[in-house]
Length: 212
Image 1 (cartoon, rainbow, N blue to C red):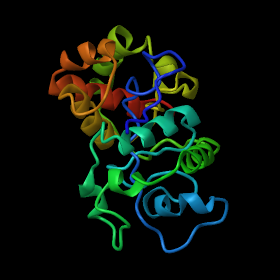
Image 2: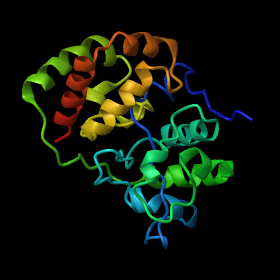
Image 3: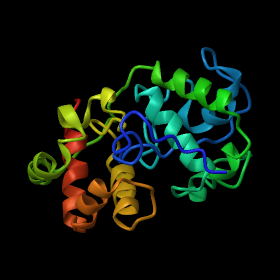
Image 4: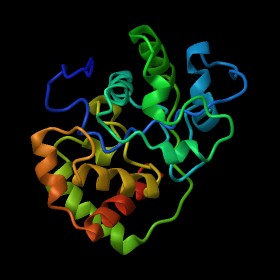
């Protein structure tokens, strides 16, 4: 049964987010500070939600509403299940993200999302091409700023945190949106389909340069 939440302004909360692939992979034991329900997230996201893997997003500090919706999207298989990320970890509890959260209750989803929303965001330690970042700034101002305020750094947008996010993750996710592999509102779909590979690389560089 589809359980994706679309309220709090139907056009914004879920797929305006370029951010949000949860790499929920097993850990042998819960770390201090994380609820038991988050145990299967700790292998990649840890207790603090700060990623050290360029393919895995930092989820700390994103709004609870956004994070809940990403988990519901995984349950409904309305975004890529990214099983290849699970292949990086030993003893993963499922074949992919969708399988991992398939039987999670709403209470579990709410608890896990609240935990990571409460953690402070930390920008990824990475370099970027300044010329690309400048080109990306122009694209952001023209096509993205309406929904991603503060250069993609405002969690109150319920659109994830783009500023300071890993570039490889952003590139991968924006291409998923462009190819229609993830649920998104029509306004975002039109913007994403117009982006070239170079545009996407430029946007990723711009967001990487923010929040430093």
